[in-house]
Image 1 (cartoon, rainbow over the protein chains, first blue to last red):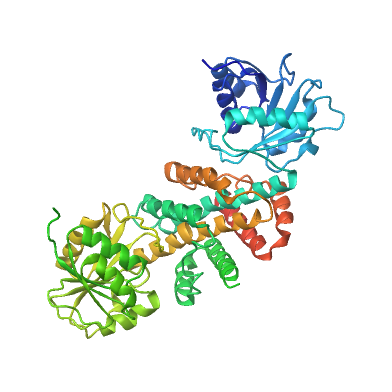
Image 2 (image 1 turned 30 degrees about the vertical axis):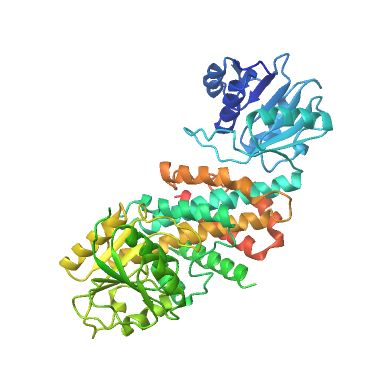
Length: 261
Length: 261
């Protein structure tokens, strides 16, 4: 039997909001309300968590924590809509916003709960191993947020806004840009009758090496060897795509400069 | 008891040569000789395989197959050194060379055995799941090469030189460039006291999505959303490194162009 922990409301019903709502519900928190702009997507998620749903921003009595997981550009507007007293703490999950996104004339307390993960529809990455980066304006609020976050993940870290912005930027390289490199590989072999999944053992081993030996130590390939002959051949092959050629040149130069120091 | 399969000699004693020598030895092939330029690195590997070693290119009598795994730039010179008759087949493991790297006046038969994997010192990725791409000049030679390769890997594919060159280029994106993206993430957080391994769950999930949903479908991040506000903030943060800024701009443009079609 999971013990009854605390009362939480959630604003947003997308991939991140869903991951938090489900994990908190499973850990014994009462999810009082799921709020989304249309109200539609909220009701599906609410039924999973036994909570009410709505499109207004009225926070139910008894809510101790509000988690906002909405698209970045909606965040400033949403924080203005919330009416809650100082018995309520409100956190957002955005990597690149600080606590200054909350309005000056608010009554509620505030903070940040940033998960370093990529969330997509139809995938549940689980929060247990996902690093959660927390921030709050007062030490008691920070203690409270650490306590909640620790029930969700094995890895809770306190960071300032500057560090979190760097984490968010680094995550773009480690996830979005990594994915685009894989997407580019898929484009390059698209004309052949080879399946993209032939690359899976290679990419898995690349990742194992990067996390075991460190990515700088495990760099291989023509760029780090400064093998201009192979680089020239590759640029010839890429003549079909200006975009991929530019990516090849820029990344190759970056590898050469990094490793020639 | 592993059956005695055939007699093989290997030129090279680096990471790729070692992976092939060990796997073939374990599958019951007799490794007759390991040849390396200095002879030194060959003797260590030879002792693991119960074979002789040497720095000359004399192929022992009875050798049916010679596998050359040397650095790309040494390959043309090595193929000239080999003295062997047409009872011997010689293959190289290079992704970006064809069979035209073998000299016209050779007596031996020739082909290619290209493993789509990254090999590093101290790591044994195993060949069972590694796609092996084979090529030979005559159908009987191709049959023979497929037969040998199939004892090493579950996945043996016959490709022409054009396709293999594309595979090799695509592998640079999927492995070397992916690794450099991870290396760049490490650089970005280097000044903070965050360990690089916080990115491991994110990168693993990115990879799972790419191979389950396809990398084009699973692209996320500010570029694919055309979120210029976040992109501007990231470029400000990257003012400390001209190289990383160039990589960010070029990859972001490539993602935007690809997904705005």
